[in-house]
Length: 229
Ligand code: CMP
Image (tube, rainbow, N blue to C red; front, side, top):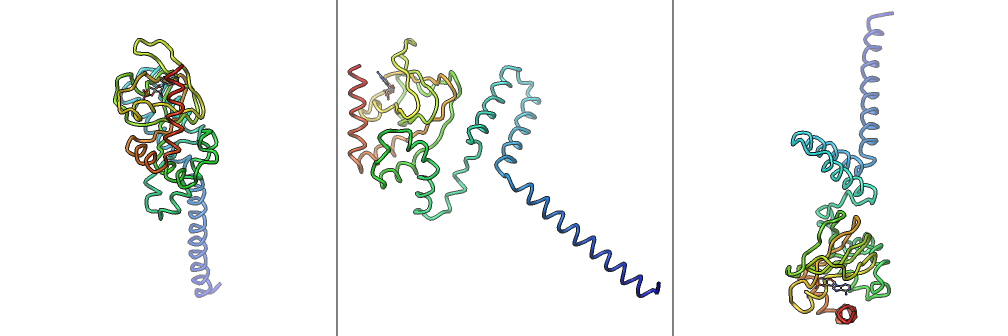
């Protein structure tokens, strides 16, 4: 009823609005950050949709692009930011890579029960690449840049003229011949389905096989069986 009482009420109301606004913005922030991966994915989708509109991309190409993003999200492969991990100490990094790549370790028979030091070194060098159906991983005659492990999907091994030699799936590796014998690729490899492939660059392959001869022996063993078939 008095002027001081009114002033007091005004101050309390202003403070109340401030506190309410502060809490509300924090809750909204928390909700937005709860799923950073989804946000990243949705952001990418928005950008790519705008890009496709601006460039009047044909409908079937749009469908392939959306299919790819859909696959990446569903297979939880949409958020692969290695740069985020580069600041971590080496020991934590190698434990983390062992953890992240545990599903490829489970799938490749040779990795099960393999030397832990060798696995740690291999896992920190492996890099994931996704191939869409029909995409060529490499062509016969190309130079050997890497060894590939199939995490999921099916690839066809083809002659230069396109005849099928073999098909390989989860847990298999390919691309060893060019690396072991320092020669061009003996065949073309093409993805039949969406494929998650882990590739081990040539220099890493040379380093790991030098340090762990059992790895090279296993690779050579498979290579001779393939050559004999
Ligand atoms: P590279 O020659 O580097 O590239 C083609 C790859 O196809 C080859 O290594 C092998 O990994 C793979 N390859 C070749 N022949 C066969 C086969 N008979 N069975 C399975 N894979 C093969």
